[in-house]
Image (tube, rainbow, N blue to C red; front, side):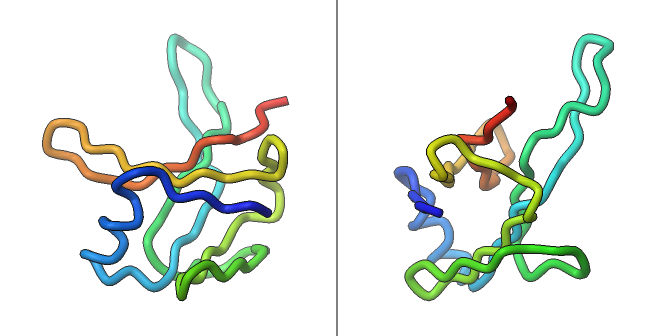
Length: 95
């Protein structure tokens, strides 16, 4: 798995002293459609489940084994919208 950190992401991780991230399946719904899988990034180690562990620049990244990414590449992005700051991932393979 190739892991990329988009602009601002690495700085946010360092400022918050984050040592582990978990990428898991999140469910979203829109326009009457429910149950769309959308990867969700959580800070810390997962409680339970089956994950692949990747180590990148001193950061432990746990990725749910059922998630697939295009070209086996996952890009972490930093979303700063209004008063909300959060990490997200791009590259999920919806097919």
